Image (cartoon, rainbow over all chains, first blue to last red; front, side, top):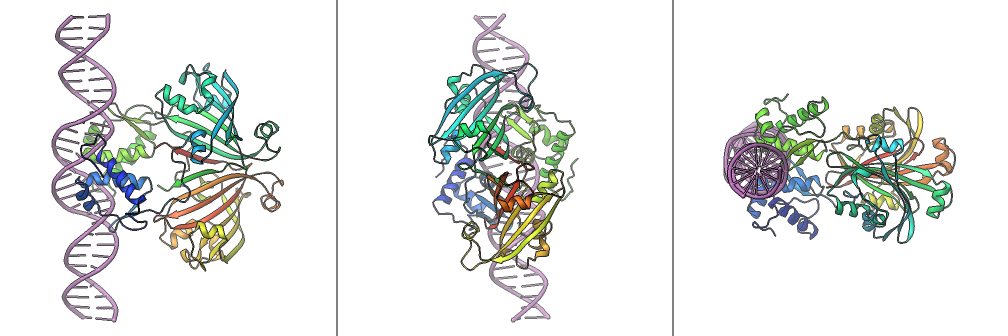
Length: 241
Length: 241
DNA sequence: TCTATCTAGTTGTCTATACCAGTATGCAGG
DNA sequence: CCTGCATACTGGTATAGACAACTAGATAGA
């Protein structure tokens, strides 16, 4: 239930309560939930507060509204989307696989031109270049090159990059990655990739280039990943505004 | 500016006005916009109404808030995302290319097992199968197979599918596609695909399978597309909640 | 029986206000 | 000089109420 004395905001508690009622089958797919007025009586809050909770759940796709009719429970998502996922480690965890890494290179270099542009770097600013093989359940899944401005993560050492780079960064700096743009394309494995990923030359590769931005829009990193196409599919969800 | 007598809601007009001020450089990247209290005086509406406008712009990524400090203009997106885009026609338009199609097959068939499952179909329900080559600037870009339940678009004829299928559907039924899940993978062209797309056999193919849902969660269509990897890159944007 | 209207219920928009919590700045006292 | 507190800002949460727009079902009249 909800607790007026909790430090958590009421609208948040109501969101969680409604989500729980959906999960438990108390609120049923395609059927209306109680009206906003009824909910506001039930939770003993104003209608505007209930509306804030319901609006958030609508934006997250759990509910949908129809004017004059009511608010309905949306159908379950078929394939769950990657809700804000940005790291290999998290991704593999969601897929139920164990992730690990092998570090191939760890350098501090002047950025190549495309990286310099994508990270909006001034002249003379260097970047870390981290080249790794990523494993899922101990089999090669991808080769990855990560570029991060040295200025944004000073003191990063090669020993920090064996596990999740994100965990390290989020623990040691209070950055939060807010959004990322990904460009996805299909290519054919070159000899180096085939060797590192243990696949045939000319096998299919899913190439993903991700540019991550902090909340204020500062580019934080560029990651170029080459996934084995026989092991990896990218799942994405689109919402019409 | 904004107009109190307009039939459009005030919060929407304020959103548009703020977006326009960002575009015109009146509000500058990484700098604060006027506080909510100032905006409410300026637009002569209550602070809650301004908040509704600002909240929407924050959710869409134009602004970000910092408690105690203010509301800031987010940096421009580097690569624009595909904001709710779901159709080949719209996609090509955004990329500045002219789209066209060639119909290969138009059938009404009992659905294959995977389509039946993905469209949540009862037994004995048939689907349209529409097989097309999609061209961008008169060069082959993709081959596409679309599956739509006959019950959801009765009367669809082969002559309707030369242009944008979405436009036809939205004009003739009041469906709106609300969201879609896409599974993206890399493959190697088989002989048929190579022939249709005018590429070498064993060239890279970007395969995208999209399942589109209506607002109440009813699956509306499954589209299986095979894009020429030398011409097409998929762009996606992730937001951390 | 059919049709038009009424009515009660829903979400959509908006107001005016209040207090809380975090941030920055300036000023007083050491 | 600088430390710490007061203060005046910011956005965050919440209230209670009002009217508009839309829907569905009941009701009355032809």
